[in-house]
Length: 66
View 1 (cartoon, rainbow, N blue to C red):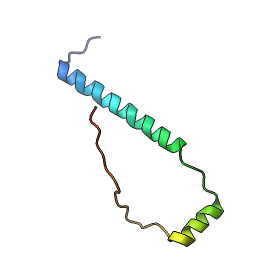
View 2: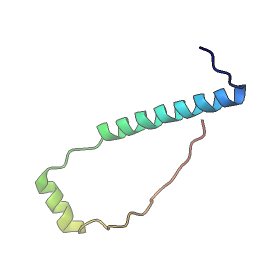
View 3: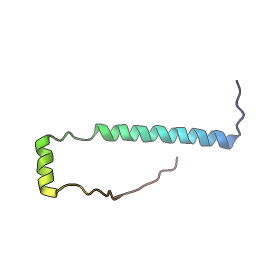
């Protein structure tokens, strides 16, 4: 089986695949580094800072071009 693609299309497909892999690895790394919070700690945090806002605001946004 042979698929016809020009160089730019192939480059775009490879670029997108690499981007997805990097995003997955970053998310996995982020999740591994999150500390566990006990129920008591969470209650203390809620008492100190209140409940989180329902509307989330973006604190930082960054784009990386591969």
